[in-house]
Length: 391
Image (cartoon, rainbow, N blue to C red; front, side, top):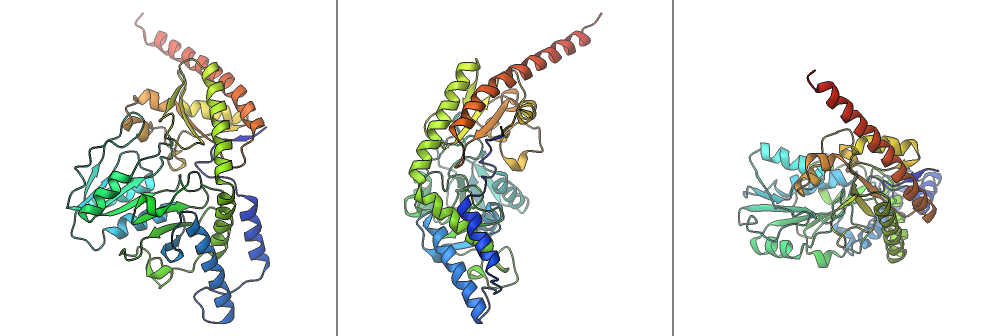
């Protein structure tokens, strides 16, 4: 049995999304949405229908949705675009953001911007102290839900502070959209990132919500597409798959959320019963219902992942974008975990096609694999200690 528990890295394509894309590819639709002839206008109509569907995911007006190649591009457009025409030199974020936020911020720091990070507590929640958001702040960029530990932030005070001092407020909702209800009006943000493949749409398509009237500096130049904010022929096939995934997600959001939360709780309970010292990273309540970030005592996460994969359980050590690194998670370190604790953590993330049978299998196999890995690791450490002793 193969058990896929890495939905936060990318969810399997939903059948509705696959069917929508196949229908499009079989329809011999050849028009460019920017062309004025009949085929182009037919393509344009399909693109705008998809835009409206995607906008409904966050209860936003369709004209505010800018299609991008994914969450990374949307974050880059939001962050770099927001500071392109401002004399303010401060950007406020927090230390547990995704690399697609952290790297643009690092680039802007090299250009002379001041990057200030709000502290987080041991659960990954942003501290209440918001003094760094001052009148020199151009942008505040915060993730609604963390990709590694699932912590959901309460952003109301941040939104109010940003609005009061005239800073733009960007929310990275790539992990949250489609897993919890989201309304733009409730978050009161200027910019929001969403991604198709996190909720069962195709990879290679995402979107940025841009509040009407909000001015951004385009990052891709070459044409007037997407309201002049993102040059290039739109990925119409991807947009249709994105829209279909949104449609299916919204039709069963509450049902899916409750089912996944129940399976997640069953898995956590079973693992705690079998593994003494297992630790949940993140809050017990204000967390994405599908996400379990767990520290396994006495076992390095990367070793555990390889052993689990051999037994059919697919998970990750955190963000897929950092999967090639054996450095401890910057998220867990920011939350106060030691480097060894952070290196012993893996993330199990459930999704729309996770079954109770798969959770039953995972609950049995994960403790067995952990015992084997922890025993081997303890033996290796003991042997190394013996070798290192003076004779």
